[in-house]
Every structure is written in structure tokens, then in C-alpha cells.
Length: 226
Image (cartoon, rainbow, N blue to C red; front, side, top):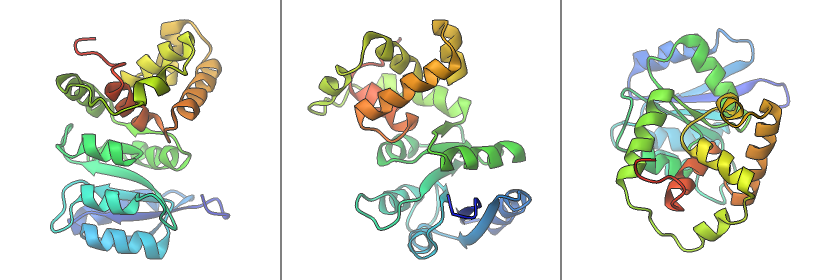
């Protein structure tokens, strides 16, 4: 977040009317400022570097350089500036979403998300929280269970660092439950769950809940039919 407590945003979508609509919604909020617009992925990558926004709202499907490749370049390790990336999609499951999660995108929203949820989602992502529309979460979990675990070396060992209680919380995070829902499921206080989640992310070396969901699948924590 910038020192003025305003969030600087970059909107990337190939449809001018969509960009205009998002700008109108977001700039109605005192703390949100749209510093640039991009009509394709290549422009999004260039402007993300030039303008150094806090959050990039990135359409998944764009001509030329698509949203997935744009996210890959924007979130490349070692970059001088790495904004948060919030993917925008028209459908409740997109063929690119799984890979975008692995790349480090912090969230996904449907383009028909109500205005207040869009603004709240941008703020949540800027705070370092992950954001998945419930419909996307459910479909992603279904997609995960169809894929065999990738078997990346060492990842199950990383999960073994978790305490039994943290592993319980991790499984529920992996199934898309919010902190409030996890608290109700495990009869814990929401603050306690928040602390558990923070420790889990730190132990696993992932930046947010989105990447935690991916790792849970790859480590075999999320089982088919679970």
C-alpha cells in the first residue's frame, strides 16, 4: 500500500467498456485510484513495471499475450516490483485459473461481481489476503481432485512440519473454507484460526491461501472425493 494509504490500481482488459466500468466503480471509493489501463497482456506487463501499482486487475483472456502469461511475467521472482494480481474471469471456471494460482495470483473474481464486493476484494488482496469467488473455489477443488498429485519432491515433507491442529486447519483452508467457517467447524475462536493460518503459510513458505490450496493438492492433503 502506498504511503498516502491509497491503493494504486492497474486495470487490464481487452474491452474498453469493461475497463471503464471497473474504473467508475473503483474510483468511487476514496482509497482506490486507477493509475492506468491496458488493453492487452503486453501493455499490462509494461505498465505494471512503469506505474508500480499495488494491485493489477488482470483479465484472464486477452488477445496476443494472454492473462496467464502476463501474470507469469508480472509475478516473476526477482522483479523490482511485484504487485498483487487479481484475476478477472467471465466464467466460474477458466482453463487458466489453476496455473495462475501456481504462479502466485492472489485472487479471482467473476466480472459480474457486485460493486461493493469488487472494491472489498481489491482491498483484501492488497492486504495480502487471498480471494476466491465461492463458485470458483468449488470448481477448482473439483478440478484438483481429478488430477493426480504432481509429486514435486519435498513438498509432503514441508507439510509434515505442521502440528496436528494446523493440519486440520490446512485441510479446511484447502477446501475453500473462510476463517469464520473453519472456526465454526473446529469450535475455535476466529482469532485463533487466523493465527493458525498465518503460521501455516509461514511454515509452508507460501504467500497466501491461494498457493496453500495448490500445495495442499500437490502434497496429497486434498484427496479425490474428500
